[in-house]
Length: 446
Image (cartoon, rainbow, N blue to C red; front, side):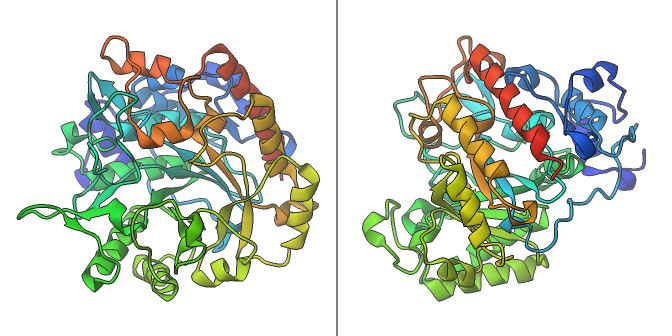
């Protein structure tokens, strides 16, 4: 095969020693969940525990993705020129955002943590596709190296926070496969993930921290440099790093602590270090859109207040933590209130990254039901925000915030397979995933 004719998915498979041809899986069609009524061609794998996919090969799971083709066409080879699903420039105003902690599902070999991008690819068949009126968007928790021990698992009581990042240092060893870097670059690995997500009808984005003391700049000549928002070179680096990711196919950026930009409500600020000024953040978001040549990027702010014009004028499309899905009627009425604003709307929160426990499966499913159906018209739906835990329930002695702050391996024998088997709830988690699939099956026809 001519190297110039290879897709990034082809390159990934060849780098892994696999061939690039796919085969039909007859049984997948019978067990796959499907959208109801006119959405019957939208399919995904549900009623599972994550390890059922995570323990398969990358080739095997990509094969499942190919067999879930919404068009009904079976592709013997991965198609060229796959593009993102088109929901218009302001798609982020309506989307369901699902943050997946790609570090937590990385391969754990003893205390070494790597190849998280493989696990993200493996879980793609189990993420519900987008509805007719709105997109589902995966938010990746980590792309850049973290500053507390990148590439390593540590005991659950030792900090290894995902909220501290290093710029000018490439991509995290937790995520990228360095074993095949001579055959496929880090950028191409990320592009392969994005291409496969698009094939599934799903958009993608990434989490980004903005607290200055939580960002370091790698310095090849010595000690890492502390980040400073007053330094124009640092601001430029931040813009360029984010722009580069957008050019690789990402279309959304979740901005940690966005509520407090410009010194707003600092008495409740829990980050560490200075934040950008309000006009500075306007400039940054404008430049990311301009330099990436993407008018449809969705910028998502962590936490929202009722000063909605402040966030909209900053350049955001939505914000979290304004309302939960506990009260269906309140969400429905908020949806009605924002029906004339097609650029910005606050989102319905199912769970956030600071969650440390306390929500039952029933409450969680009720919130998701509210987020998916709390509207008078589907075109007025509010965005929703979910975590890994909302799709694949975690094991009982950890939480969403715990796995953001630490990076434990739950492997009993030092192998990734054991970690995958023990990282999530088992029988009841599978039953939950089935009920979640039933909710999405009805939502996809809107």
